[in-house]
Amino acid sequence: MSLITIIGRGHSGTRAMSHTLSASGVYMGEPLNASGDLLPPQAMYEAARMFGKTVTLKSGGDLTWDWDAALAAEVPDAFSALIRTYLTTVLESAAEYKGWKIPETTLVFPWILRMFPQARYILWVRNPRDCILGHHLTDDLADWGVAYPKIDDAAEDAVRRRRAISWKYQYDLVQVTPKPEHWIEVRFEDFVLRQEETLGRLEDFLGFPLARISVNPEAVDRWRLDTRTNTYDFLAPAMAQYGYDGAETSDL
Image (cartoon, rainbow, N blue to C red; front, side):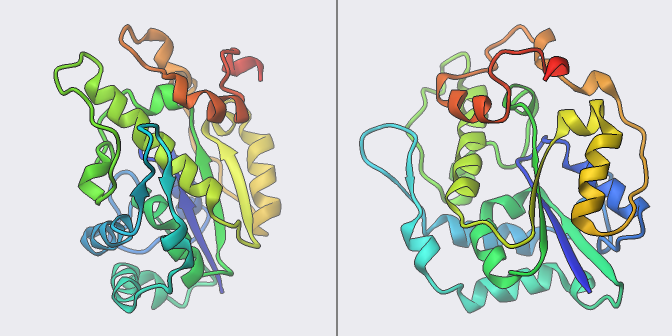
């Protein structure tokens, strides 16, 4: 049995990987919504809020958090019970390959890893300038028990700034978490623009052939048509790490 999960901030294009896995014979639980998320999500949401309460914002007014308590703590039994409730159809399945996808898994990644250390983890990354164009449930970290510097609600970019902070928080959380034995990072842009090459990497990682799904090149770099604020200085290090430092994505 091989367990697979996809992590990545909402609007990272994770549905493409979920649909690919489903089309390739991987059991992704049931029921699924149009985005390939396993439903119902309430137990996962409750688990994410439980984890969020263990995280504190460091003093100084900048965007840095203290995850020491979360990383050092034993995974609470109540958390494990919630996750197993959420994953009931997956964990009870006799399928050789099975897994799940929901963006909120990223919010609890350290404890998910502790529960399932041998799972195969696919980190799905997308240019944050595209990620913050649309609404997602994880836009406001306060909804998940995580503090962040106060934002003036009257500011023109208040909504976008909250989304960008959420992107950074989830990026930072993944960075501070010790990586599992089975780990791969995939950019959404590469999946769309270099599908064969990217699927080849994923096939080597997963150990079985993957289906080819339709992709839309216009989904890449949508931010270029956006006329509002869509990037922030505090995103610069992460953007540079993943090649989003101002270069044309298609030339990377």
